[in-house]
Image (cartoon, rainbow over all chains, first blue to last red; front, side):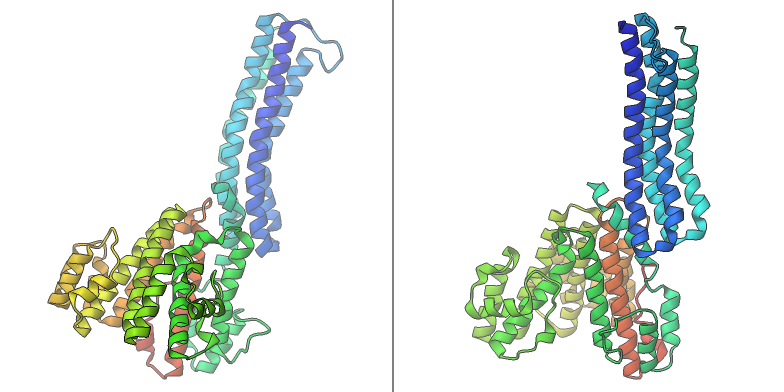
Length: 157
Length: 323
């Protein structure tokens, strides 16, 4: 296997690991807050569950980009292409937006979810507003996802 | 780490829903008799199945216990709340010394939610094993005990312990390393110093007495406050107007109950920003203080109704609520 292919696989792995770490942290802290509310008021379970799930998308975005990258280099079909170092580096670089932004936005979205769970605990009728605060962070993960997909697809193999 | 309190703070947010608002307090005020007031409290979930619903003290004590129980469920290291618990601990010391020296034994005067329970405290004082007490209490316990034994001066005994309480609160706040607990400790010590100055002015106490009773703090210059107290109430008010406690000066001018109310409201103002904090121990401390304030306000209303006070007289003593 060429060095270029190794670099491309590294990019895909980073997208999964870093974005997954961001989501794991975000869903984890939001889950703690959700559990706190449900322990006192189980009727709010559905609302806080949605808030807990929102930071989980970064991990999915990382997975999606990794799939596209691995598919691009033919690894999924069992016939990996022999990439040049330049092509491998390009795929690695293309994976970095969702890897890095996924990590950072997942963590921040988790903390915003925690604050939004606080809103739902006291004013459940304001759930939509609470969800919007959390969803705003998602914008930047989506932008990074878009660029990663376009860039991975655009790399000549 | 701030992440340690995420579960607890969210749970506290849900619990804050059951705190009495100003409207609920008004509803309680509108209840005609003392008996109906107790019924109002039990209908709002105060006390429990084992509490005598005709005994106000039993209901209020149970609510205090419930508050600490829920915090203990969520926090492993309760020492972070020493700032709040210290007055109860030192109260136990005061009661134990008086029980041992004066021979009046009553288990009801002790608080049970602290690190040294009343019965243990009595044993320590009886055996004079002051070293078994927490470090911040050892010196003052010995001094207060000797003072009461040799002079029989109960007031001086109280002054020694109260001063040590204030100093212990400040030390505990430094250790807690939390902005809210530090602000609470500062407000508590400053308000206590102001109360000492006001009472000393009314009873004509000396400079030496005030210096012995007042604990230094950052927002009050105790020397200037004590000098002002020697000159008269107007000088105390004038001095307070120069400090962060200008509102207290205004309340002092209106009367002692307005001043007491201002002192408690000052604590509520200190904790109010915690309603918007999701990541530290601050909201937990704020909830405890809000509950204690709520219980105190209900106690004031109940005793006002029991003693047939006019609504206006009760209302001027009602504290602000946290929610």
